[in-house]
Image 1 (cartoon, rainbow, N blue to C red):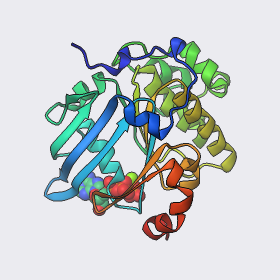
Image 2: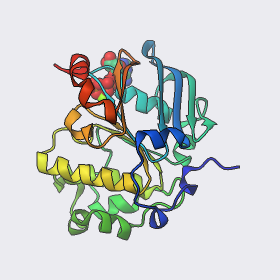
Image 3: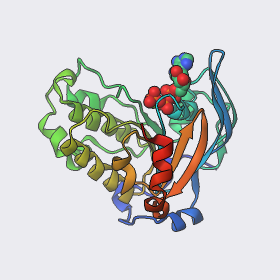
Image 4: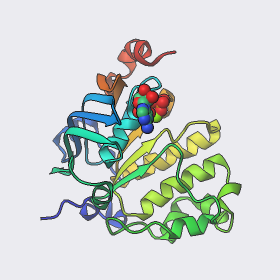
Length: 259
Ligand SMILES: Nc1ncnc2c1ncn2[C@@H]1O[C@H](COP(=O)(O)OP(=O)(O)OP(=O)(O)O)[C@@H](O)[C@H]1O
Ligand SMILES: [Mg+2]
């Protein structure tokens, strides 16, 4: 039996459907955290994180600075010093697996610092990522999806704009064949017009049945995008809101994440 996410719908065959939260509840759970604790050294950061993401869902992690959203993504990837509890990827328990084994299951992590190579060109950056899970997008497929990167193929990483760097960072994850994407604050610091492009990209990936967990500060970025939202505070989920509940929960949300 294989648990690789790469074996779910190939991109070319994917249907253009947007799952509703209700439909998502019937779907296969791609990611499930149950009572996850995580530490950096002696610092106990996650205090019983419990959340799940179904196949094809876009889910946001909201919250104030320092609440533990990035640590949640890092804990999923195995990039914390210690973790306990249960983390299931497509049903398989991964709490004891090292990061490279987790990546091979088709989990792609795009860290806040983006991790692209400044000295390499855009295209070299795209050719570098290993196929972790098989079935990753070809460089041509990336260029079809993000024509802007095609125009900048010969441009060095450092000379790309912030928005282009962010697109490239996501594109590199798509090259690996990962079907579960963990994206950290991708809209941060970008101009509204670029944020709109990112919205289009994530919407497109959702229509291609990628499963996406988005850490965001910008509630506007996720309000029309995500099927569900989790608010994280002191290393725990303190609020769960579905897309349908979002409008009626605005005041409550503001209390948790407003400045
Ligand atoms: N490498 C580390 N060593 C020790 N403590 C850390 C480390 N990284 C983060 N922390 C602490 O863990 C807590 C949660 O940080 P985390 O980065 O997960 O927050 P966040 O919700 O992503 O917020 P933001 O990105 O807005 O800061 C914070 O108190 C932070 O200081
Ligand atoms: Mg963070």
